[in-house]
Length: 312
Image 1: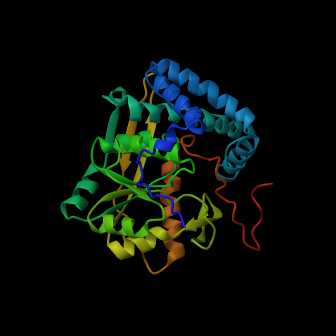
Image 2: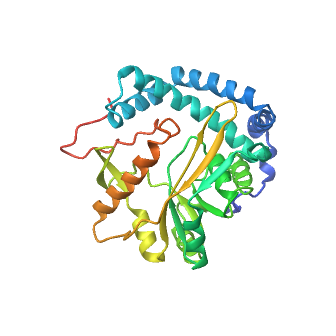
Image 3: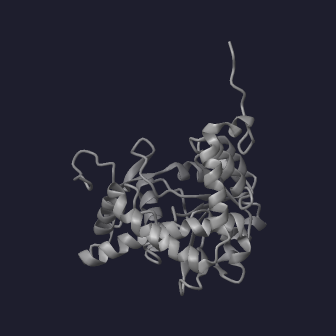
């Protein structure tokens, strides 16, 4: 019986030189070239590509519109559509920001500020692990790079299906994150937290009720993951809200990392109360820069009996 060799994350395989991977290699070279373009061109390309995606990706567009309608009922229909379009623009601009973080990090010099770093320093002085409670931002890995200017973050990641793409992204992220932890490697995640590492974790997506509970998100019941409760209980790590966003003149953007005080009594004995408190933290963060969030995910896809469907 033959066995497939096991490869470590980020490890090169000679099979990556086969013709089936040539398209990806060409794409990566093109992306590297885009990373050295002046910001003015990157911004305009991001705008153009975002508008194209908004028109072309019908399902994602409809999901985004519906999410914004539900979460921001105070917005008019015109405001919902304008902000939904900006979500796609911010996502494509975020791709260029990530490319800059990977291949041209000097571009960020003089553009980054931070607030609340003392909370991280206090936890680290006590050799206490930190579980950052964050969101799926359109800044992507650029957000991790912003944080890495002030402390060493680890990240929980989901491996790519394509092995070459996974290797390339893993290697690019290795320039930003101290450690990359597979989302299925719970033992590794627990071990790093017990060792005092600071790990970026985003409990803001719908993975069903096998991994969570129903809790209000922008006033709407949503399946909310509870894995972080178990992690915090096992490791005694500090639960610290983390948010980063772009602000100011888009032609000369600035970036801000916002770190808030550790969440007290998390976990408590009430998992629904815990889920509600974490959702409230995320809500507060998203209101700072609403369009810099991946609203095209179906945040409300799980609807148990008695709950109305959010999406068509």
